[in-house]
Length: 225
Image 1 (tube, rainbow, N blue to C red):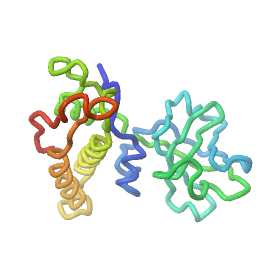
Image 2 (cartoon, helix red, strand yellow; image 1 turned 60 degrees about the vertical axis):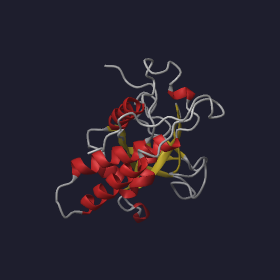
Image 3 (spheres, rainbow, N blue to C red; image 1 turned 30 degrees about the vertical axis):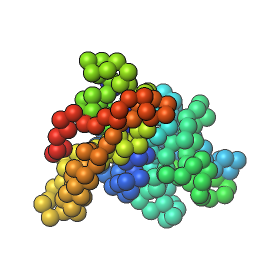
């Protein structure tokens, strides 16, 4: 099965928009890594390590989201979410979601912590699927239209990132919705409204200065239901 070469959003992008819903929207079997022996040393309060989990082998990567909880400290409550900054043989370097490296308070107090429960839920498959649909509808990487219409040639992908986030969340909220009168129903309707408003406005600009070709839009973009 062929996969798209570039996806338009990350789990972090989804968590920025979905806030506390992100772990719930991830199917429980979509988990890159988990354990109850996480450690953060006092020498680096942003580095999560585990003696039993190889994060690199588990393909945890920048842009993933890590959920941390602790059995004894109420500060964590039901868990805090952090973005993955980088992964190495030493563990996972974290940062606060939506902030630059080391922005805001670190995940644990000064002094470090052990016995941290962690998991890395993800929506990698759903993001890839929606990215494929965007490529299809906007004829990106379509050699029959133009051999230069590749993701690398796009001047700015921010609108496509926003569209990808909206579409993935719409799909997941719809699947997880259990009641017509639920909070999810209101979110589904809002996401659909935003998709309908954004998709016709997206203009693809090409080249390093954005003017290598006339701006493009969707080819037969249909309402996403």
